[in-house]
Length: 366
Ligand SMILES: Cc1ncc(C[n+]2csc(CCOP(=O)(O)OP(=O)(O)O)c2C)c(N)n1
Image 1 (spheres, rainbow, N blue to C red):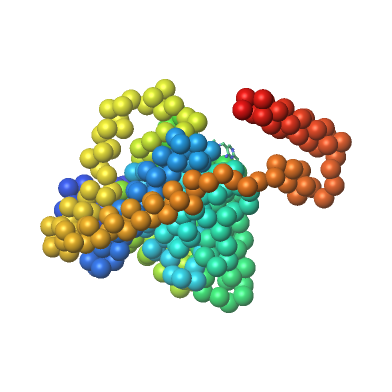
Image 2: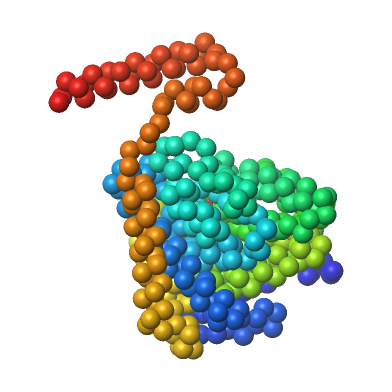
């Protein structure tokens, strides 16, 4: 491979433009209509899940939800690019990708309700726990994929992270190890332009995040992260390469976080409404809908069927999550360390005292 082959293109790969028109590309073919319909169904469901989870936060049923509203093409593309036996290593923002791999929404979200541990069976779904410490999952993903390779398995791993996470040391270590040891992993960076309030321009001086790949000796590619057809094509190519023994790839998807980082963030303090509004015209659902309708693949019946399916998913989420968590706060102290230090004992005394006082107040108020 020429070293210039490792460089990403100047413009992100795009196969369907924001108005739904096909863009010809000499390297990447447009996925077939059936694949695009499956992706569209995923986008509709993903959008509904995002919006339902945000509503559950406002109702006090979830403590927090990092929404991927606007980033659904990346979420669904990542899930669909994998074969059944492959593995996904997601972050806190990737609940829709986790669910698209077959995890029940309520299981993916119990953690956000204040429960502890990952709420789903990671082995059954081949989805690692959603990582909150930035970029740590990239190292887990590389180690996991390296082990699979050494065992002679054909497993490929897609590891997700955000633009902010690329500034972490763990990102560098994961990329370097993966390239040196030819590990079957695809790093998929969702560049949504912000790490909470920090814009991309304060994150890197590189021409793009995908350009970082050449420094490690692996190919980098840029893709329009709001075009699920392009995401599927580029990730599919990288997954095939990894499976065939070609080693890792870094894919940067350019997208946009349409909502605040979480409900704990006020994004009006660091970005203009006009900027957010400008991305509405690039919405991933609208462009695929326009394309599939124009080629006659998406009928009104199918639209209704997909919308109904998404509504049922949202109803199941409400039913499962509109309950009080049955949690013993002392579990936090029981299971974190083998024995309790004097400081832990002191913390537990403080917390149990607070709980007791709250109970008395609630009793008195009745
Ligand atoms: C190691 C570490 N440092 C800091 C944080 C606090 N933190 C949580 S999310 C976040 C921003 C991450 O931005 P990005 O990687 O772009 O992902 P996004 O949230 O935009 O999907 C930060 C700094 C953390 N979770 N882990």
